[in-house]
Length: 312
Image 1 (spheres, rainbow, N blue to C red):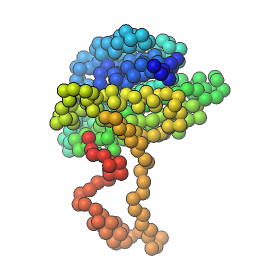
Image 2 (cartoon, rainbow, N blue to C red):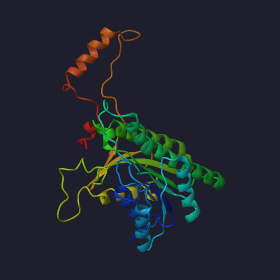
Image 3 (tube, rainbow, N blue to C red):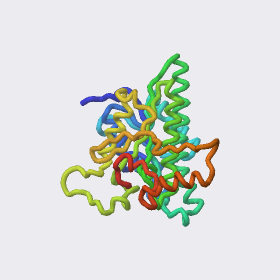
Image 4 (cartoon, rainbow, N blue to C red):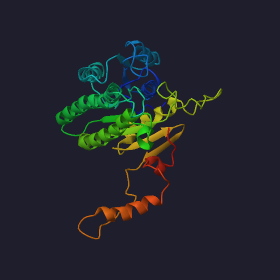
């Protein structure tokens, strides 16, 4: 069996269940030693008492298969605990090579009903959580690069969502966080490239407790692998974590059920030039109103239009 990650170490957040679990198992199968992080709260909204159970169980599963793994049960959104997570990988395995950010929660509500707490909590876990781990992993790679006098090995795989790409009416907090993660990813990719580090993001479509409402009408087949199984997403994460993906940097991928799409950066759809030094209201009214009159009423911008994907 090919093991392109042999000798490398990884941190996977939110790895006690669902996508994170599948990704941690895949990285281990490909040869990586893995820190399995999960705060272990039972509610997908981040409610309930934290538990070491989910992280410990996945770490034990990796070790039972002959791999190396350590469990970490801290909160990714806590700055100090994120530092400790990265330090655990360094202490256990000598260095950190791969960071997969997956941890998240949901607190869905329409924007006109959302509370401040529902907004803050989702932004905190998703966006701040991605930043916290990235900050300490990036510092580790920068220090190693300085000591080595050249590039080192580093891979970041962040988790965005089609909720950012195509919109999600009842998830303004989640969509905003996932959009922010893409911005964080592209900024990180530019900042760390000279150190040998790449940063990419994925928009996975998979059946997990986070998406049980989204896929309520798409039941799991009685036989064969579920097209929405997290196991369809994990191989892309394994690839992006590998040496083979050295030229993929600052990219966004949509992945599900045997399909991978590379998302282009936003493109200009139409361009208008004023006939004078600057536009007047009347001139803008003339050109833009005519432009939108040619499109369906109420249509909003969505990258999914370019991709040919339906919103999920």
